[in-house]
Image (cartoon, rainbow, N blue to C red; front, side, top):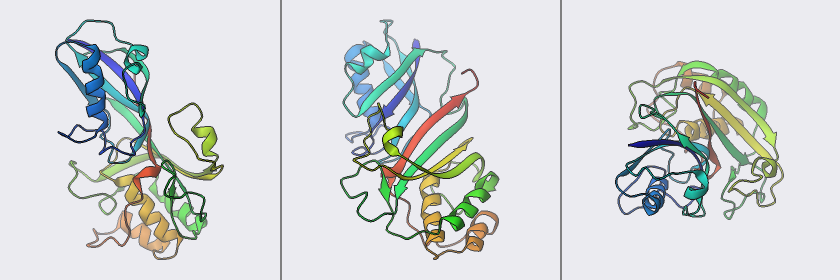
Length: 262
């Protein structure tokens, strides 16, 4: 077998996530189909993250395993990839490389605005919350996330995980110009020149964890949850009910996956 490490960028708007599903539009399905146009024999792919329906990626890492010894590079792969999918880099790797296991960290970013009319239904890459938000209270809660916490109240139960304890290395909320972030990418700001960016970096994340965090943080911002309530979500007992909805997937990006050998 021949092995490659690829870094992929994609618009996940019209797909049911990364992982292949029979007869369904998925990023992995499109990638595999494109690879089969170039290579003979068996071809398999394995990603660092199974991003969910509607979620995008700046830098998804995928291991490609191929029987065909024909040379494969990013230029050749991009020649057959659909327009919502782009290969940024592609290089040989070891057969023992496992993208989802060998990673040191993942970084996600979530872009949103709470300014009415700025980000409408036609905006695919920036989410909108209708609330007026107390950003000072939200920032207080974001500071709580750094370090090791139990996110038992902030994920979608049913995901595959042995523990709900996760370590967050970095976490912040800033105002950015998305046009700068999106320059030379598949994404477009559609004339939005400023929005909020929630950035979080950690060893690993639970199913829908970042979207649950945003949903809860927005409720803190609009006063429906107190800062104390949020602290209890992290440090208290498991709650039977979650009064928030998961944040819209359109604002979420897998930004980067890091490895020791880089």
